[in-house]
Image 1 (cartoon, rainbow, N blue to C red):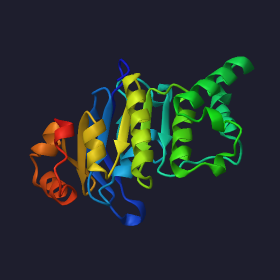
Image 2 (cartoon, rainbow, N blue to C red; image 1 turned 120 degrees about the horizontal axis):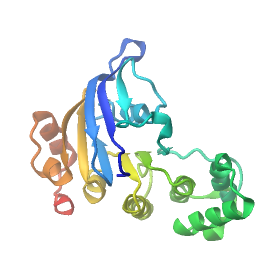
Image 3 (cartoon, rainbow, N blue to C red; image 1 turned 30 degrees about the horizontal axis):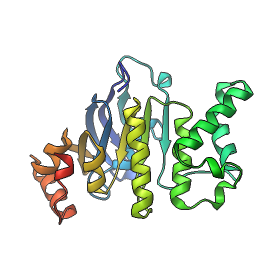
Image 4 (spheres, rainbow, N blue to C red; image 1 turned 30 degrees about the vertical axis):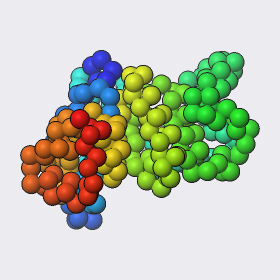
Length: 243
């Protein structure tokens, strides 16, 4: 993780329309690499991710980044369905650079580099709307990569993709983490969590019930909530990848 970057969640509560989604959630994420958030449907995973990004505000509780103000953190969010504009592939990436006010030549260089990284250099002039689902998600990652974020939040980025497209996305995510971007990933794909994550938060009923190293969580969960969830999610053995 970027030096000095911590994600500290304290007492997060969120009750839209009186329905409890987060119930005093606490977590401290300090490890570098990829942190996964897992848990049953309705546990509050996606809401927690949006709280970290500031897209949602808690009814009570705080989100802090160590001693740094939230506005100083360069962060990006990639959703399950990427939000792309009706323009070319290259233009979708170039728009992310506008706030940086770069010279045109430098902006074009960054766009070309990002497209090459995600394997879309030959699609630069095509409409983003004509890309396949996997290509659109690669474009979304290229748009993020070009801004060099400290923190990347991913909400089920491969949920609707086939195995080949999923593998391509996982390779890109791994490369970004290896280059120094801190990544927090929400995923229902436990095999993906085993392949990518360094540590795992298990959520249940709006709280973190367990947080630890991926291998420990997936092979020897300590809490009954984590054991029950993983028993239901893993009818096959995928622990080897996490060991």
